Amino acid sequence: MEKSSGPSEGFDKTRAFVTLAGLSLIWGTSFILIKKGLEGFSPTQVACLRLSISTLAFVPMLVLYRKRMDWSKWPYLLIVGLTGSGIPAFLFSNAQVHISSAMAGILNSLTPLFTFLLGVLFFNARFGMSKLAGVFLGLAGAVLLILLGNEGGFDGKTAYGLLIILAAVCYATSTNVIGKHLRDMSSILISSASFGMIGVPLMIYLLGATDFLHRMTESPQAWESLGYIVILSLVGTVAATAIFFRLIQETSPVFSSTVAYLMPLVALIWGLLDGEALSWLHLGGMALILSGVYLSRR
Image 1 (cartoon, rainbow, N blue to C red):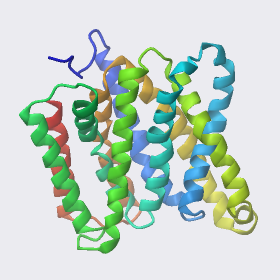
Image 2 (image 1 turned 180 degrees about the horizontal axis):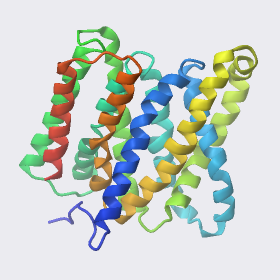
Image 3 (image 1 turned 90 degrees about the vertical axis):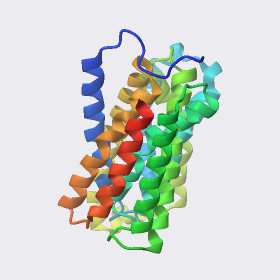
């Protein structure tokens, strides 16, 4: 039997759970920040800005610790950069043009289920029938939410929820790769190297191929949106990513991915405060997903 994907022996449970709660608060807030960023910029610009600002924040660390970098692991670092940050940033910003921030937060809670599923399929993780049932239960909740739409009724636009599900698959891939191949590398090195690989080309694209500079000079809303994106980048991406990678190394991919338990609750609260509609069926869909996550952790 393969090694369990549970928390490693001797890990500090109190610190681990406090870290999970903090990450839930930070990442649960990210969805409303993306929504506010979209008020002044296009989805592509929001994603490029988020990743570019994050890259600039990580550059000094990459320079400072460059001699400790094991570049023989660059394929894994590139995978982590693309699946852990790059691709999801574009998926979320495009999806949230059409679906509410609360719904995005709920669908993102599928991440632990995909972390478990990919772990079983590709990373030799153990599984049982209850865990498998959890995956199907969570997916049923996701299907319900996509069919319901933002206002509690059927809406073609909510097919964009599939982009959030794809982002959850990306996050699950990144989490498993770190847990399997990058456990011995500093979380700061993982973050700075993975962002460095994807961020520089996106900066060039943002400044040279979009109307970002024009918006900054002509649109009053652009500056306010930029402020939200800066917060999203520095807190929700830079700080949270480094903390999350460290948590994976200290515990396990599946334990770390349970940050998704509290994230949808935070996203729901922000969505309601911002006037987003919510029905009891939405809560039912969230309950199915979280029940599935619980079963997959047993």
